[in-house]
Image (cartoon, rainbow, N blue to C red; front, side, top):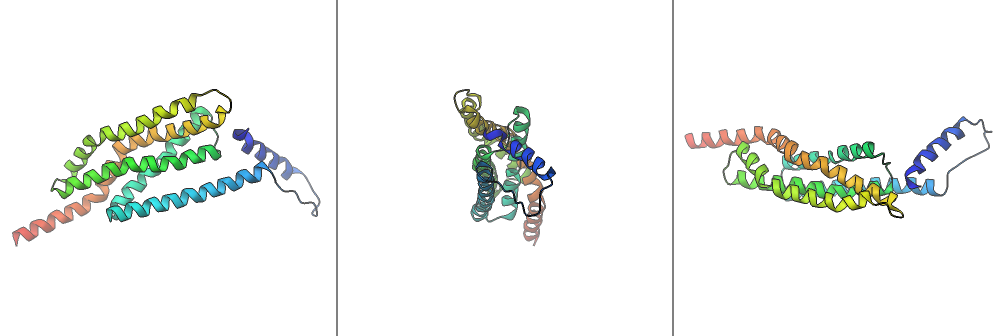
Length: 216
């Protein structure tokens, strides 16, 4: 089975390492083990490229390092939900779950962008930073919840299915559900906090500059 292939390969490696073989004897891996390792390497490279491209798109859209940092900081928390889901359900990391992690990147980033973009609009209209964050959180609460919950409910049949070959697709559903449960909470709590911490010094500097210009 795909989910236990890594455990079997690990146990086999330990037994081979314990053997005292002649120096001219060489042992290597072929078949599913090498294919699995190659697939993990390619998916990891794809994940890193995806993160870099997402950051470039966000930076080009907002043209602000603080906003880009606030959003990309949020992306890391998807792994927290995925790890918790793996521990609670006994799911192993495999190619299918790795694909689910890559899928989560686009979903969770979109939720953060929705909040940050609207908060920027409120600030540009002259609203105070603190008030803009609170108003943005209240206004974007429904779209964020709707996006997360509809995806979670759509993945529940996949996570609970018991048909033939379901053990493969169960892992995908569990990965997406776990990541969205935590990232949804982070969107509503941590992203506003990080956004406020990052922009508070700059906002105060702008206010002082404006006041000084008015006094002149």
